[in-house]
Length: 184
Picture 1 (tube, rainbow, N blue to C red):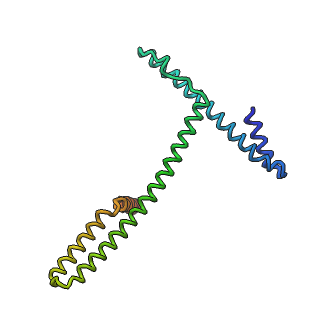
Picture 2: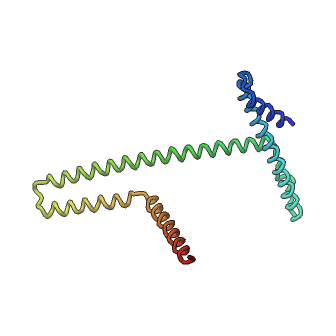
Picture 3: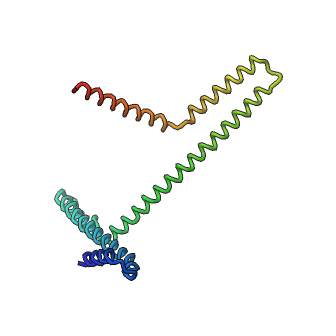
């Protein structure tokens, strides 16, 4: 009954565009959400208590004394667990965003270091006046090989998985088109 009254206040506040009602709207909306959360928590606690009774009964029939092991669930406890779960979910989400950004920045920094180091070594190889042309060519070939290997080894494997996924989707589409052609 209290939920219905709060909902009716909310609807009336939406219909009337009076300043007083508009100022009262956030408070009414807050009350509405509190009532909805309380209603859901009471329902969840009742459902969990019913499940606990069934589990206790099953355990008792099978020979276990489970009367003391399963607690009674309260709406406040269900709300607290849901709030902590939501906090954990938000923290996980934020941490994953921060770590992805950090890993992206670190990859860029390592790419810059690799590029600068490669250019510096290239400059050293080319400006070495005592080395013969064959020695310089071998050194440059070795530098190119090292750069290619570093690029291959440090490139993300996510890209190759993405390409494989796209390729398998395209193959599936081609098969579907071929099947439609056969049916016609």
